[in-house]
Length: 266
Image (cartoon, rainbow, N blue to C red; front, top):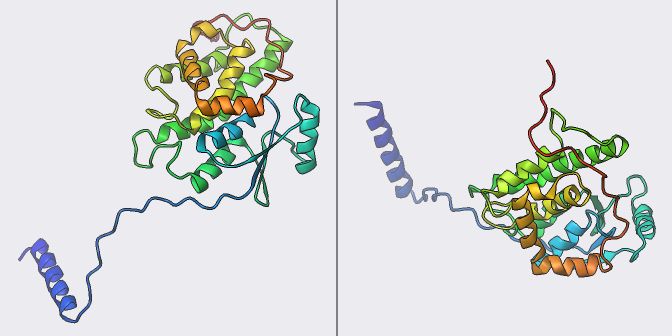
């Protein structure tokens, strides 16, 4: 008798024995139940107009969740003083009072709110083919895109560039997003997601501060138009930026010419 047949007979014998003595066989594993939203603690968003704290306001408007918004209208220094009183070591916007905890880093705040209080919203299901996309762009927004943009901005203010870097520069980081949006309607893949909220700020920085040539990125421009037409985005602007942009950084006088990088000499 083969091993496979022996295992089958053993399984049948075991099942008959357990049934005979009144023990039930283990039921097949049920599909995981959808996660339930946890109760939302009181949330206060400490805000600077036109800065990253807009992301959290926008998220709450998309989800329809309650929050309190704290800032001094038209007074960036006054708004920062409020933040510094709450978080004196590393004052930054957003700083969020989440129940009795103080949270910083917009991406972490967004993920906390989504995963605890809005499961299944503004992110694809774990088993979806799109699941990796918003996760990637949530991290790319600050880890690769914003960090490169502000690094180039500071360097190019000091010494206006005559050519592109042979390594990764601002145009390359925006081009990566442009190519992706040529194949997908949203940074979440097929659907709008929290990654789109994260990506709006650095892509605005790239174009409004003249780090890149806007005309080179039509997919980004079309995506921005869709984003800015969303009712929740418009509600965010009305509440978080009532007087338009406050204290914007000056545009760069020039950026490197668009096009292929100049190879580094051997």
